[in-house]
Length: 134
Picture (tube, rainbow, N blue to C red):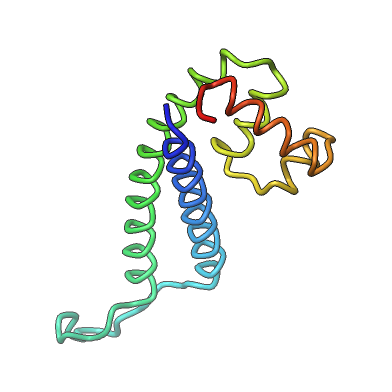
């Protein structure tokens, strides 16, 4: 494993989070979508613009496919990192999991582990050193 693998996993994790957030926003916006009625024999294939429902379905399908792709890329990298992290002491392993697999910001990692920014930098450096990456 390399530092690049860690960064790629973090990037994939952030991409997953972003797509998940966009799906949630799309679903929230769709709450007001209602059905369309065509009166009588009105033609349905005149090249009319897509209905809101159709745009919603297409956007959701596209985002779902993007989510699956990013999840696949993330899962591969996360498994590789997880194997390496198991060799580390628990605190160091948790720090790397939170940062690279879960994609958290340093402030969030510090809050979860109840450590200061200085301590997180020191532990991060120690973890990379134990893994032979520094």
